[in-house]
Amino acid sequence: MPDAREPLGGWGIAALVGELAREASRLVRQEIALAKAELAGRVGQLGTGIVLCIAGGFTVFAGGLVLLAAAVLALALVLPPWAAALVVGGVATLAGLAAVLVGRRELAARNLVPHRTLQTLRDDAQWAKEQMR
Image 1 (cartoon, rainbow, N blue to C red):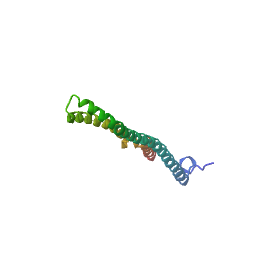
Image 2 (cartoon, helix red, strand yellow; image 1 turned 90 degrees about the vertical axis):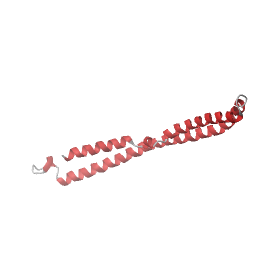
Image 3 (cartoon, rainbow, N blue to C red; image 1 turned 120 degrees about the vertical axis):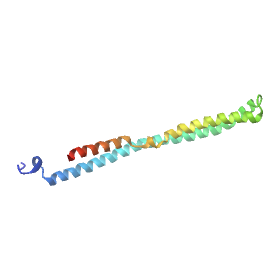
Image 4 (cartoon, rainbow, N blue to C red; image 1 turned 135 degrees about the horizontal axis):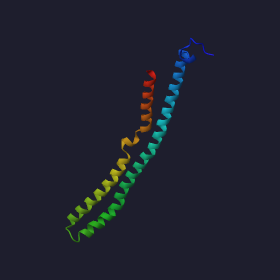
């Protein structure tokens, strides 16, 4: 049974400091585990963005070469050949740019930030400040 002279309901200062150290250590381990889990999920998203960029680039290049040649030849029936090539090249460039932009958006750094971990760290810091009062 705790002595009435012991502070804080029977917990000595040494016991409180020891408990605080154990809890802080456990909290840090849990935060690291959360960050790892959240970042692992972001890696899949990163892979998706890379695959979209590669697929978009390959599709624009491979299929585009054949279709562009056909489009230039067809358009050259009604326009001068140089104008037909210019129109078809412009349209192909815009289509390729759209694919690259979609892939780039998937690779944006903001998608890789572990938001939940950062929020729990802020919450933990706020809780610690309140406990110190």
